[in-house]
Image (cartoon, rainbow, N blue to C red; front, side, top):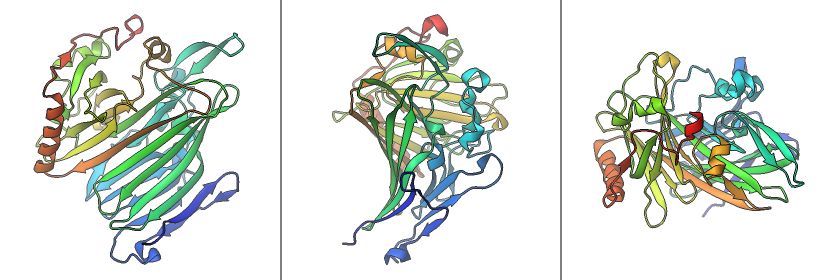
Amino acid sequence: MKKPKTWVLTDEKRKIWIEKLEIRPKDLDLAHENWSIRKKSLRGGSCDGVDLIEIDNGALSFSVLPTRGMGIWKGNYKGIDLGWNSPIQGPVNPRFVNLQDHDGLGWIDGFDELVVRCGLNSNGPPIRDDLINQKGLQNEEKLTLHGKIANLPASQVEIMVIPGSPSKLVVKGYVFEPALICPKYQLSVQVSTMAGSNNLLIEDEVFNMKSVDIELELLYHCNFGPPFLEAGSRLEVAAREVAPRDNQAALGIKNYETYDGPISGFTEQVYWYDLIANQEGKTLVMLNNSLADKAVLIRFDKRELPTFTQWKKTASFAKGYVTGLEPATDYPNSKIFERQCGRVVKLGPGEKRRSTLSIEVLTNAKAVAAAKTEISQLQHKVKRLVHEIPIQKYSDLDNI
């Protein structure tokens, strides 16, 4: 068996940065396989200076963005696009994104990924958060929409190929998120796929670098447009409870599981879910098209990511026709409210928290039906409670 082969692309401490690299099976004497890994740096416009790592396993391709928190940009599976068409022409270099713009909503100026992490200090709307520090003094922290991690560059990046039948293609990276006084979060990322497969796997670990307790909020904003999103598309989940975020979402509660085509002027609708997991803590959600012959499937561990949010933004194509499927440590409410509800994670000194999720692409009715059966079996013995109006358990009723 051949040994894994590793290439270092970025290492801030050792002053290593590789602008271009291309790896193919022939470079490892694996002529029977058909995959490629390419690294390049983009030039021009708002993309200028963005590093892009393109993974093509022979069937599924996707791009990892070291410059943007190791997020995943667009993808494709056998000619079927993954992602969405954002009004933002990215990937945008974070130096062109001011998180404080638009009253703390500046994050949206760089938002066009397939998968983008929100966090790590906060993952909700912009607020002023008052905290008592270790000396008993009050600190005010100005939190911006969805936090900082998506607009921070990786300090270390490497790619690895593990030869096998099939071979495993891996991108690794480390992103450090600074805090008020000193760096406190280290995000370790591994994105991998097997040659010829229909899925990719994200394995993250957040490490508390401080000598005191810290708080963590982490959300995976997984975003899909056509062909999975269209009039008649459906979100399949197994859930104990579903609730609208606000009154606007309550207007669509009768049809929260289904989608319309593009509607000019559509106002976003958001729904909170308490999902059902199996005995091992695993759960899954699926977005399928109207004919139920194409779907994207997200699998994750509810013990790691206990909450799930559905974001509907079925506006015109020009404004961004998209839905977000969002596993997370907590709901993307204000951090103050989530703290009051006991959902903000605490990490002790040196403590780590792991999270994993996979994205699978299904391209025939049989595979979609099988996934639907798997979800139905989780739901089988539990009657779903659907709230028609926002409730305090999930929404900050005083501030919606």
